[in-house]
Length: 164
Picture (cartoon, rainbow, N blue to C red):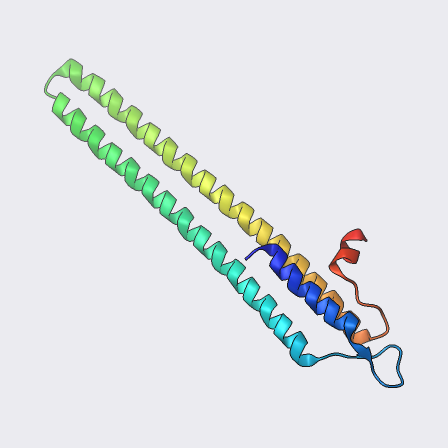
């Protein structure tokens, strides 16, 4: 679900409010079709749920990447230790194997740390985008809701709000 889908639903809500007729003998009070408005709000809720589900999937993928990196690091470490033990029989060869094992271990740790850092950065960016998006949507809904209750002020569209 793209962010624009939710904005399209909010646009539909605005259009419904703008297209609604005025109540009899009133130039400020409009009669709004509750069924249509509730359907659009339901669509918005569904879209938000889909966005949240997508972010949960991203977190699961991040965890899988981290787990795979840690597993790979453990396998590399086991191999390095086996190699070091096989070479331990000869003193000079042992020293070389030990240094190699430590180097592989450090490289594995660095790789795992880099993967973990990138996965966390990606997840943080996704959550920042989602947080900004949800805040904007909630602010717009609250603004239009308050305007709806005041009934004397015109409804502000997302386009008008971004131009302000």
